Image (cartoon, rainbow, N blue to C red; front, top):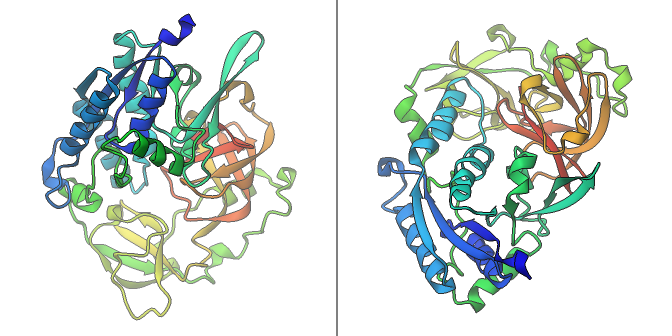
Length: 404
């Protein structure tokens, strides 16, 4: 069984999932190397006196010792700052909502980390993600499929929705077929130091960073008005609900109207308070506005970071929170399965989600000159620019894109 001596570099994060992933690979006869990525230095913004990466790095090292595999820590904090942190600042500053986890997988784990592994002559890299990979052949060439994890509560395929065929070719997901409870059980049986460790929260690798604090260090407060838009506003009147999502019924104007939000204007509503910076708020947010006396809670429905205005709506069924469509510009469309790429004028029906762990919802994808219009059967809450939409056929992720 010569194939089993292939070399795999595992991203050991100091958590239970990657620990068990490494253990399973050892059992399968691979030559396994554990690599810990240090992606963050600035202790001034980590919560409390925890220094998460030191503890995580130690745990990762102890797991590697226990499994008898070589271990090394690499410092990727410069790349991380440039590719993730700086990007997030720019996005927040522009009033968009980035998803650092998806970027971290695309830019760090399956790019810089993967390149590092290949320099160590690795055949594969492995992570503790709850997703699965399958291979099929099209015209005699292998095509890699990204499938949902077997544990429906833990499926992380959404976080990997920006990976391409080259990256998937080199990726292994050893725990994707397991339930979280099974992973914990394996870790306990092996007496791994990470067996009972809580799942990490917060930004991928930064530890429990207070994101607002973190952003506020860079983004200066800019006071402005909070404006409430009545649900009877004229812009909500002509929104026809898609009848069975017949795309032929949509002319370009209706498509744009359904999938893109016209900028709100200050004269559409009334001033109900003030805020410290529109860039600290995201669409769908209700905490932090600190405006009382409205009866129902106020939700952010739009932010204007140029004019420093936050637009809000009263109550969680406000029409400004609910939309039937979104748009992905041409250069932001990504096909995990290039063979499924839509040509201009083509449409296809898929299941889609706009955030992690959101149930999949029926959607119609319509490719036009400008980009991809995604129409949902049911209205979606809190669609925010900068987030990712991912579309699936069954349990396979087919593609994704950044919402305009």
